Image (cartoon, rainbow, N blue to C red; front, top):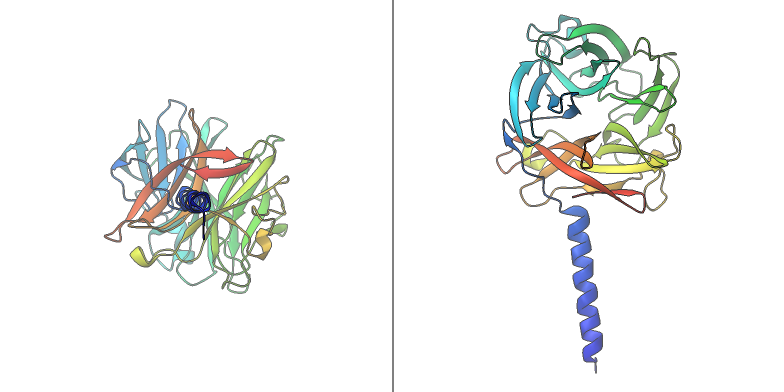
Length: 319
């Protein structure tokens, strides 16, 4: 016969496990209003305290917000097109997965030119004093990949380290995520051939992309998206993270598994009408580190997702 205490203990444990599951996985996006469509978002806080977002669109789309909640479309970075990218896009005007940051009194934007299913891709750099539509000057090609490269030069992210070194992570499928050191004076690689591997999914069809590197305390965090993007409500994108004491890795997940072997701790995943939350980017605000991403709503439309991040025993949790 089972005692009442045993039953109660079992119920409490079950409730605890359930709440833990909900807490870890089923995180809903915070409030977002206005022009909420976005894909592959990146956000930077401007010196005046407002926010600038860039995203995958013709000529790279831009949005602004004064409060991080209500967003407004403000045109394209390149309203007259980006003819220098058409070798990689097969003539399409759609430019992918920009990365915004602010250094030396100006905005830096790394962005991708490619087409689906090919690794013939290029990452470019543009710079602007204001971030406004039409104000961006193209600084040219940064990294490119070919049909036989076994990596894909898309999804860039710039990390500027406290020691002054500049690093660009990038990659999608094939041989996984890569890291290359840049010259702070040019924003371009010091050595084009010195490309390091930082994460891969050799047993899952290579389904990893969209790296983003942040630092908190003593750890570098490598954020990434696993599985399948860009399929509306059928998207299986998940937001994952690993950490390392060195920017070059090895990055491991909470269980100690290397991200080079498919490791990753899950931060966000599909639930209810939140489909495929992924392509993470992180910036630091006054109240917390902020995680931005896209997900698909019940209608299959890509939406801006925003959550805050807290750290539990050195591991990020979205809330």
